[in-house]
Length: 463
Image 1: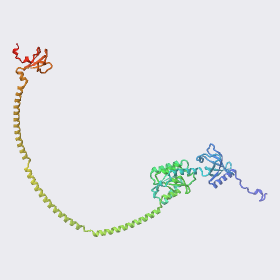
Image 2 (image 1 turned 180 degrees about the vertical axis):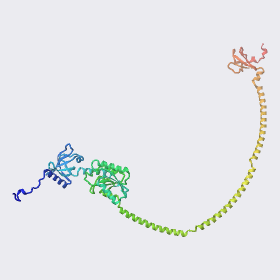
Image 3 (image 1 turned 30 degrees about the horizontal axis):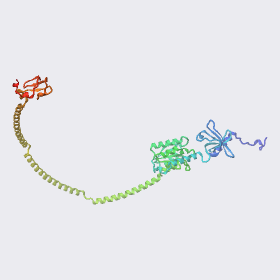
Image 4 (image 1 turned 45 degrees about the vertical axis):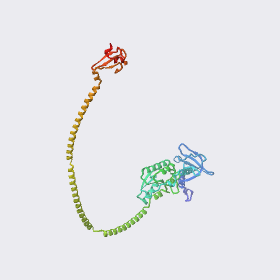
């Protein structure tokens, strides 16, 4: 029988399996090092088809294995290469299958100032040269906005902090959330769209743009140039509330006001309701006091005016007497005027009768009848005189008429081309002539032309 102290009676501790040991070590590492920044030279860099990166960071004494999965390495530009000095941020862990100590990287940047910081400074300098940070272009922030627009994640801590502060300080201010993602590649475009939607909506008096704290790459969408220009172009007053008090982004410089946190933005935009209640109570007291003073002054003035006011009945009696007097004067004036007008009317009637148109018409008819008789007599005498003169002229014309001459035996001779032949030498032997008589005419041919001397002799002495 074994003794109580024999080796077979000693209890041995339970041995861990390799898997258990590696799991516990991994848990210990990940809980002890929540996040770490490590700087070193990049080596053994590989990119398998899965898209993950595997590499080693080393310095002149040690090295550590690292892994960077696809979801994180897609934002790294340009691609790192062997020999680069880089800074990574990640979780310290253990790859249990091989027991390898490693870092799961979530961010990588060149050592020194870092690529993101360098990009931040370059964009800041560019926008500053363009004047987007000038104080003169910043719009005033309303003292008491009726509606606040908030461009942020609807599920993040920022909107919760803003609503909590507003509910405590001034619950009457309305809040409209324009939801957007605030981290990742799509965040910048989402934020620009949300700002433009708030401006189109036209409901908010001021716009808060922000999110809670985070790393430089977590806040990087607020360093995007498109976001900066959207804030600058927004017609609404803008308040940038990104990260914690020590965090600065491009949005802080472009916005009309920078708040260190979302809670501080809500504090700046909302007055303390208790202060306003005290102010309103004071104003109410001053208004009431002023009203009482004014009421007493007006009451005293009313009493003074009432003492000076005459009895209206006396005024009415005096006015009635004056009215009776004016009425009697009016009747007298009207009677006198009527008598005067009747006299003028009678005088005008008598003058009108004296110059009646009927008398004038009778006189005119008499004068017209006499003038008609004189006209008829004048026309008769004129016609007789004209007939007598016409007869005398007719007789005179008959005496000198060629036709009368033809009646005494004379003739009018016409040659071939002569309407009247006056001289014998105007014709030639053989010419046809025409002789017009008192009654009728004859045609003949010239057989001989006698000189004027022969014609003057008596025709009977030709033999």
